Image (cartoon, rainbow, N blue to C red; front, side, top):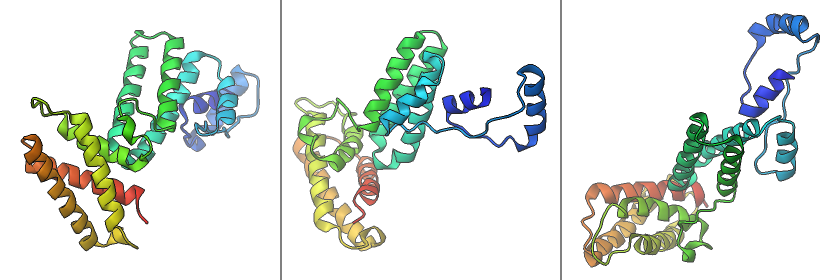
Length: 235
């Protein structure tokens, strides 16, 4: 029972083969039981009924928060390449919540509430900082994150990085959709044509908005957006 609780809380399965005899002996001596339960039901964040049933088995708000935070971290790691800016943002927020709780700046109840909120936004890909006009363009949201990460560094009078990044995201989405073809992720010529068109657009943005974009900035956007497209628009 103890092992099942720990594994469920932290969502990690460790091989105990080497320690099995000693664990059984300790359990027999101190807990008066002869069985060790090895199997646990993983916390599935995408199945609300199963998730809530598993969370009820944990005895405290802190344990529930740890279980949610641990599994949310796994989801973030697995999906990072699909939308790096989005998942990096929520990874930082989650770690801050964990650190604040460990430093006792958050109560157990607040830690659980924050973990739940962050987890829900990760599951539903919900980011309140995304411009409204991108809400119906799921992949363009990921391009937006890559572009905005670069543009927000520049402070020019009259320049709105959020709006210009949204413009760029929609243009990049259009370019990828128009240029992609069967097996394009394995075709460097197609990828290079995409990059050339995106680069041309970024140079126009640089000129029209008087933004001192460097070649490194442009390369960062190109590489990041093509990697997202390879992951999210493979067909």
